[in-house]
Image (cartoon, rainbow, N blue to C red):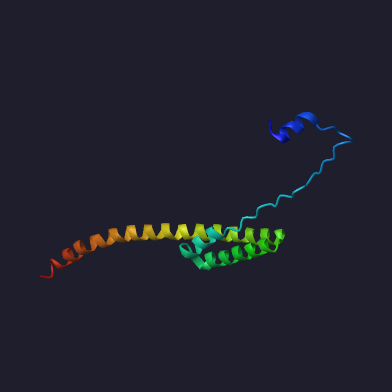
Length: 126
């Protein structure tokens, strides 16, 4: 038998001489404030109508700066503005892409009929 085991066997269980004191540590959980910086960067690079993506990116960076100095109210304010600008940039960008697709699709149909119309109109001139 090891010496420590022998001493534990001889001493037995610890005896309580008084009430057990406990310490409670309250850890405040920080509310996570999303800064939407990835979404803003995407909109700034790909869908940037009226420079809304760049402005949203600037507000996202401001929100991140406010989070670093532990100003939760300021971070939430900038983050909500960035989110609103990102939504508008996304909607206007997608709408413009859809309109361009429609214009090119209908324009290409008109261009495909153009040689036929030219040949038809020039037949009588020769």
